Image 1 (cartoon, rainbow over the protein chains, first blue to last red):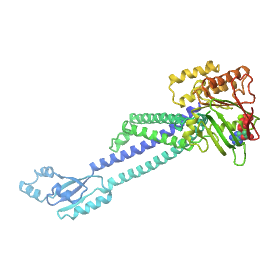
Image 2: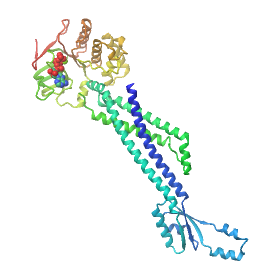
Image 3: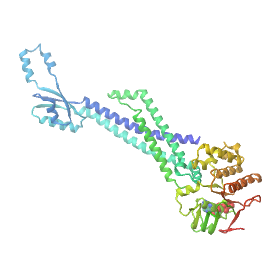
Image 4: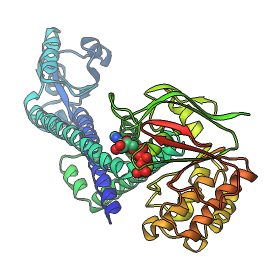
Length: 270
Length: 223
Ligand SMILES: Nc1ncnc2c1ncn2[C@@H]1O[C@H](COP(=O)(O)OP(=O)(O)OP(=O)(O)O)[C@@H](O)[C@H]1O
Ligand SMILES: [Mg+2]
């Protein structure tokens, strides 16, 4: 059937737009999750020759979230048998203080080097270890990946919108005769094009449902989760409430706006 | 008497330097029955088109149902058309709608509920002897049957004015008689103004009528 074919091409096109948008959202979500993971894992080790309070650290740079002293007791205890109590006490006094510093967000390489310099300005700090290199490579790769995916999604959404516009022109053409007859009996524009809008709305709803099903299948399948778990991330690929509603709104707006473009563009018959 | 149609120096054409109707002046009284005759290509359908606003006057003035047709706005035109019933020469039925729904079209446009429009449609389909075809689609009907559907549709919303373009062009004696009776009925009972384009005025017509003839771009009344 011709009309069924028309439906399918619009549904497929809308589905593609929604899928592209959802991939964009999911990648964004993944990067965010990865950033929090990095932030939580990432810390800087500071060696100081005197005790520094968390507030003192915080005063040094606003990016510093909190600091934790690294306990040296365990190390010292292990030496208990081998050293005299007096020497041990002495060592305890001369031993520098170790701190682990956590940051409020995942830093850029520049932020790390700036932070390092600031910390080293403090006369009581002897050494700062930033571990900048290792985290940096993975993160940069991910950002590149995000950019690529987002450019792709935008391109797909744009191209598909054009396809939808073309598809609807075809509809308009098919419905033109009926619409012009209705006009001859005084039907206002909205009534003449009611069928177009109804088709557009129905197809938008179907496309949204198909996207929900597609992501449900992907999530149930589990391989995406597995993949993300290997880099230590768990995200909700498709939040059925939030993403489902967003998809529906996008599908409805795309199809209704395009229908309106066509209806307004072809207002006068004869 | 009220005039439903007033034309003053009305000129009609499709292209700039061509004339189909040239500076015609005439008027049609409310509730009257008018025949329009003329040779093929003389401009009968063109004149009807101007009466339902499908083409604008090239010159002169045209008023239909109190509405000025020169540079008419879309909303005014829609309003006027909801009170006019048209039988087109080529029927103009909606192919993808059933016969029933086609007849219902003017009622749908005027926003009548199904309770009102359903009995009206059934009554009209009975009048044009097509009750048994109600569920079919226009392409499944003969030319004459389609023409009768078009007539039923034109009557559906009890318009103040009916414009019919050769409504019996495809019909046999008997079916033509049905159509003329319907138009006469609307004219006498509902005081509907009837303007009919035809090649031959039926001898059976029993209401008083006027006769306009189009020739060489002129419209003149034949007494
Ligand atoms: N859409 C159009 N565009 C250009 N010219 C047209 C158009 N429709 C009709 N004409 C021309 O206008 C003239 C009058 O046409 P019209 O249809 O009014 O004739 P008519 O009297 O209804 O003839 P018939 O009895 O054959 O139906 C014809 O010469 C025709 O070629
Ligand atoms: Mg004609």
